[in-house]
Image (cartoon, rainbow, N blue to C red):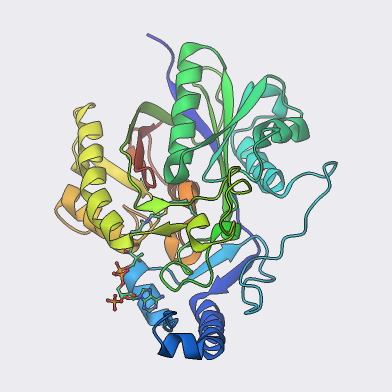
Length: 375
Ligand code: CO8
């Protein structure tokens, strides 16, 4: 029997800038009006599709999102630009993504009562990294003064949970004693702010978790990872085609298909039952039922998805204390949503309480952790 593996600290970095639905809709609608005026002849001849208006009421009802945080607000609402204006940094400067990763990592270390010297490995796991190499994780490692090794991994919405899975496996196997898993979800550069179906969905954030053996943990709030469970199933319903090959293709490297796009309805229909079955099976491995779970830290993409999944599992609607919602003010933050929910809502649990943390999304990918609060 190996020693239990615990999450001993969690960190959250929230960008200071937020954008309300109304701000986003006002900018998109002004852009759409300008586009339609500019292309009037083509639209009337049926060669170009007119851009319909967006609506703040639709967004809140269809998704539960009221506002989102963004790393850099400048440029996003400018109808001549419709993308964040993020200044390029020199190779000598800390990269944008490493900067927000370091901020979340520092707060996870503080929560766990640990210093850089205690950490053996850094995993940066998120939906996008801003470059292929050197790994953002290695940059973060250097900035924090951590020995050992680091690597990046991408699994879209399930990057954070899959990252914790790897950390859990490493601590169990003894290849690392203490692992920092960081999720710098800097997604705003990939959002198509000229597309009304998706311009409202995402926000930026960074989260981090410290995963270590219970024998070294000395934090106030430790959660044992009883087990991890992951599944993937290929789907084109959520896709981005931007990548290192974009330069070699002759098409427009900034075309809509190079940015995030999805078949939202299909995703909703296919992912909800998958996630509910996955969670029930994972709890079953521990002879637990949904009724035994004190807190649900669910993926934060869409409030109606969480409602449906919770109802399938519990046979009723959970209240906000049982299954906290953070997407109203953070929106969908790719893989970080369930970690934000954990970061903001875990300290009140009692020793022995069970919690279930689960991500679901692009890939498709689903990752879950069965957690138990330690004494
Ligand atoms: N304002 C007004 N009307 C709108 C708007 C808008 N902004 N957007 C769409 N409509 C219209 C549609 O055009 C449609 O009109 P019509 O009936 O005439 O065709 C009508 O409203 C209904 O549209 P939908 O059927 O699309 O609306 P839904 O009720 O299904 O809601 C959602 C749309 C919110 C997108 C919903 O389907 C959903 O949330 N689905 C699940 C999506 C999901 O979870 N995706 C996961 C993506 S995240 C992920 O995997 C991580 C990827 C990596 C990060 C990427 C970062 C950039």
